[in-house]
Length: 267
Image (cartoon, rainbow, N blue to C red; front, side, top):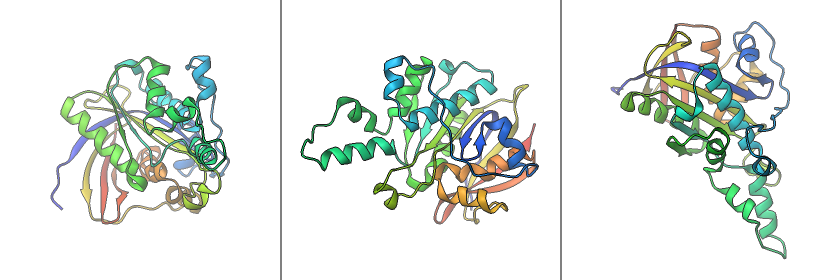
């Protein structure tokens, strides 16, 4: 398959999911040096938000802020300087559930807070409020292909605009009965700071292109179940290669007949 190749450097990583509590603690797990234990994701309070917004924030906001701030801090960059690509396969699952319950009741008045938290770009808006960033934010949704779509968009912006870009991919759970239709098992978020140039803190260079090859899977059964179960966790083969400081090629899930090949060179 003849496609354009996009190149960037990874300068910072944020990670939060079941049994994965930040990139430093998750590296030995993904590198195979420590056993993986599937534990429920614990979401930190979004301390940077004003008190009123903090009370209104749901899981997807907490997840977005936690992973985004970890990646930006690791890259030693000011979040107000970074354009952002935000991608998620859905929105705030709990908020969606509450709205559906209200609409199914006798009192169908939806609160303004519930309404403005229902839009897909709500978490990106809270990121701007928390960090004070006024840089552009691109917000995407491609169902199970959302991480791949976000990675392609972020890499394209890095190459075309020649500036560092923050990619944040987040997915959260739905209560029943929505969980039956969309059975995301837990909250999972990843953030990457992608730069057009290598810095002293760069972790690796990556080159991405489209391919028809089969997606890589994970040898650890529990991690593979996580990869399959949460769209944002389609990033796990990339994170595993970075944790192992492996020089090589991996293939990430995207669409059914089209996937993303990633060539990695540790810095």
